[in-house]
Length: 336
Image 1 (spheres, helix red, strand yellow):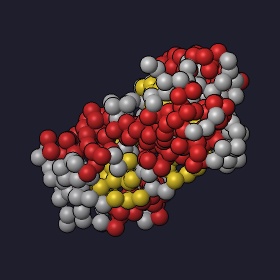
Image 2 (image 1 turned 180 degrees about the vertical axis):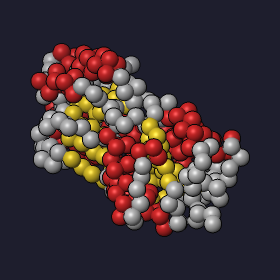
Image 3 (image 1 turned 45 degrees about the horizontal axis):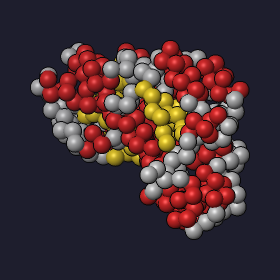
């Protein structure tokens, strides 16, 4: 038989009212006791009726997560981190892939509102922030993850993209590289713009310029774009000795292009990525990259949404985490 709230109360040794308070995030119950009750609920496979909760205006214990493409390892790892933290706190996560298309974003936002999600985590690019107005009107908490969002109603969690770009440039400069090109996804993505800005500033500090012709940007088919852009760069006269790629998928495309052209990495061309997804450690050669603290970002995004639901939101609108250079085998000293 399906477990009931009475079964949970009896198993946990508490009153029905206490279980109800835990479900609805109310009452003066210690965090340790709440977790014990959640564990009993999980063991008994007890799930409060989300539909009934929505109809009565109560919490549904569901959060929406919008990402550009769940097949992108970076966003797959973001989704895993968000889902894991949500699960620990008794929340289910509804994940939607938007392909950065406002039409899809609008459709998913409408769908998630119809499902009465308690809060929204947005990791996708948006041209039209007016799409968030219905959520704001309903006081649905919104947190942006892995990208900045210029809205006073949205808290953001992202890595220091500008600082990450500087780290990549400083690493290549230390290796003696001066002929450097940059691969980016679509430049409407704020993280790419900031990474390039940081990279350019670090080069300028060393007396070098990054010409616009040395910055290649494409669409959202990152592997294909990375390979195509790198093929173009490495076949031109005075080809670059190093590439900074604004994410790991572009960098993997660059590795494929170098191999197709018979060039060695890093002897003929050094390649730096950004993200440090699981793929970065299994490429041939393993990829030097700028690591984002993906697990910490996912955990913090969920915590910020739940803090808003409990009216305990941090007044700080932006949480910026620190990037880290991870040196592997795809970068080396410039050939003389």
